[in-house]
Amino acid sequence: MKLSTKGRYGARAMLELALNYKKGSMPLNEIARKQDVSERYLERMMSALVSAGFARSSRGKGGGFSLAKPPGKIRLSQVIQVVEGSIAPVECIDNPKFCNRVDTCITRDIWTKLKNAMLEVLDSVTLEDMVKMQKKKMIKSKERMYYI
Image (cartoon, rainbow, N blue to C red; front, side, top):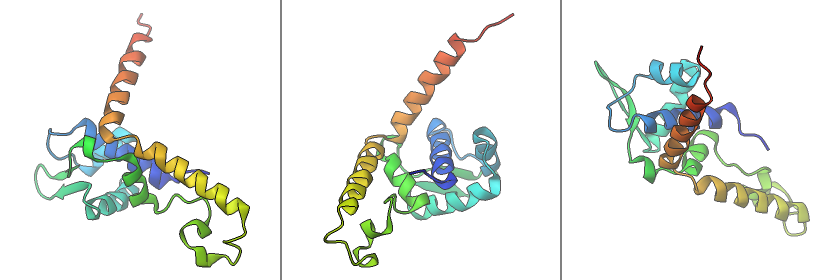
């Protein structure tokens, strides 16, 4: 099972906003540049995140995007589901009417467990957790730098 670019880029964009929480709005082009994401592609995802109440947008000078809630209140599972939709590996998990074998299909039970396990992992991580992880990675990468 793979997340699409929507999920990956949406998570990275929200991480960028969390890294800059309380510093004001960030222009879309800056988020795109820092996260190496297409600005046009990012615009659609940010629109969905604003509609869902996880991000805020403002126009004009100093405008851009910011988090609508503290980073500790936004779970990665929420971000992924807004930009990706369901993370069910097969259609019949969310829509039992999709298949006439729902009551007898053992693989559906396994796919349900898979979806639940993925949600459990994604639900256990907040944007605040991601900020802490990012900062640790940055410290470690600087420690490994070799200067001449």
